[in-house]
Image 1 (cartoon, helix red, strand yellow):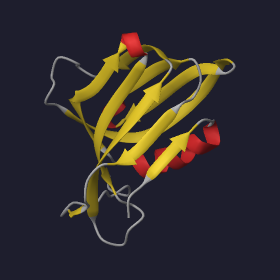
Image 2: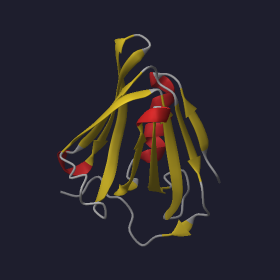
Image 3: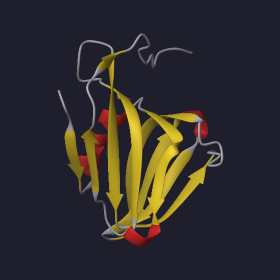
Image 4: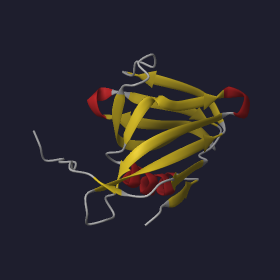
Length: 138
């Protein structure tokens, strides 16, 4: 199963957020291109939609990005990994707003956007994984 999703409002973003929950993001795979006003992120996402424990490479592109801030993320440690917990969008001056990617361990990425314009696409074949996210673990 290959996912391709578009988010242009908060309801769409909930679907994307559920697909990206527990996705792994390497700091070096965060690309902000100010001239094109876009951010690209490459993940290895856990496939919650399948019965098997599998991960697949995927990417998202966010357009209309006016700024990118990080909190609790050392952007110089390019090989460090983070785990995605959630994505949320808050209107500031419709249709503009803040897109927040919440990361495990208290970190976050916050994008100031002209409007919500995000595309997610799986880019590889699923592969089995031995580790399955456990949200009940203490």
